[in-house]
Length: 275
View: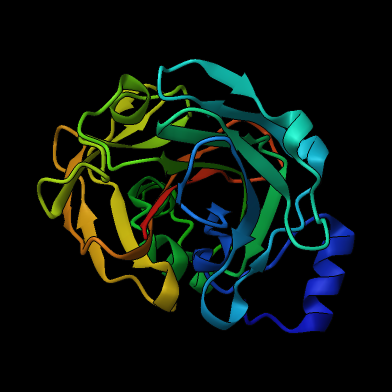
């Protein structure tokens, strides 16, 4: 985030955050390790931003609408009691008991606010593939108008406990009820194959034309791959079976009713890693 500190301070007082790019909005769950042994308590942090701007998220607990851990058998456990945001070294713990693949899901409310001058908003919309925003602004003759958005953040982390996975449970390869969701079509920890097919869902339906980015978190200044979802919401990525990885996508809809914002935006991510 490269905004002038003075401008940011004024914007915060007004209830908005000025950002130079949506890249700083990328938000994810970072376990201390994506692979673990059974009967462990894994520290997690909530991360935001990339490169030199990456930091622990300062989100308030009251904005976290949902945080759930799905066990290997698909059973869901509420994790609100396991969070202690902005702790000295972590933001909470994931408790794992049995071997298998776990999925942690976190969803915020949509009370986030961002405002950008017209040219910066247009650039952000182009960089993030927000065709609904660009199409609406062109159609309404607003390309030279400043824009504000409300936003929420949703994220999933896949954690492997014990030996490598051989099968994909439905909690891994099916939507888990997030408003915008990246769903791998196979377990990334399965031994076979170096490519990862994913499908993006928006409000429960496959989303075509969304820009999905793959970033290696050890070198997270820029994505290593970008793909547009096809007509069935699918994209495919190549990855090596080492390091930690982030997939992210952004989508928005115009707000046509009277409002302080012009668009309602969702930032969604999926993380996983290899030992």
